[in-house]
Length: 399
Image (tube, rainbow, N blue to C red; front, side, top):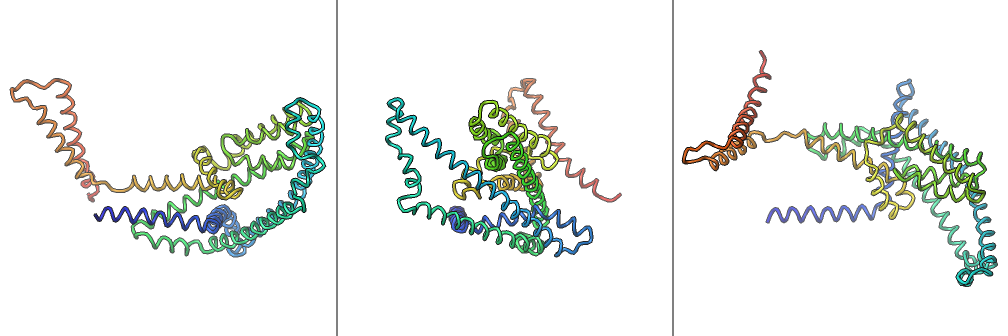
């Protein structure tokens, strides 16, 4: 009855924890991201402190330079991205009108499709609504998303600064929930996880920026349509292990086909070459990703994208790495726990006696050679195992 009550309590507690995590998922997301950011920037702060820069000033400089670089990059890229989106919109409108005119005089199935599509003259009215209410809603939604993004970025940065400046106090707070004998191991495990996550984030951030820059410059030099848009898609595809190159190769191929097959093949080859360069040349010098299972990253990415959208797409890789690191630390901790070897040896000795009595022959006939050999070897192994603790105790005593 007590065991049933215990399992019921654990089950209900788990359900309540999952419900609260879902209700406060955005706050939890910001908290986790702040931990990730603090882990990523800590080596730079430590480097400045090592070179005689005060700790508080080092934190201000690192975060200020990081935010300035991100905001400046977004400002430059947003203008170029809007220009590409406008070109894409104009191209889509022209292609829609040309296709509608051509299909209106085509085969029967083409005419049937054109009859069910809005006429080219009313295309924008269909997309934006009769009074433009859909367009207004889209603009309002985009503005609200931008405000939420900026607000979340500021909150995440603030929490990250607090975590970086008072790391020891936060660690003592949550380590106080554990037993005293477990705190040292938990602290070492947490520091190891934090260091690995920081290394992973720095590696992915540097490689993502390099992918966007190299792809964007290459697409522009090749004369590919929508170079900035395709470069940003390539930077996002880099986060997807195993199939990221294939995901970006498809839109690059389609954009290249607008000019011709030679440009399409050159653009796809250049894309795969850049991604291979980052994978096999740059990444091994920054982070050893092959220690972590890429399938877990993909499986983590699918539900997070469904729940959190683009934020889940960015959060999934470091979260999957953190899950694997936590599992690794727990497994090491489990292996280091002492075992009741004496009880196990007594049980094994009793089982040996039971087997010995089963094969005992009351008529005095000898055992089969195979069974006799196995029983003799098993008895020798049990005796050697029983002598190990005594030998260890004797070796530990001072001479």
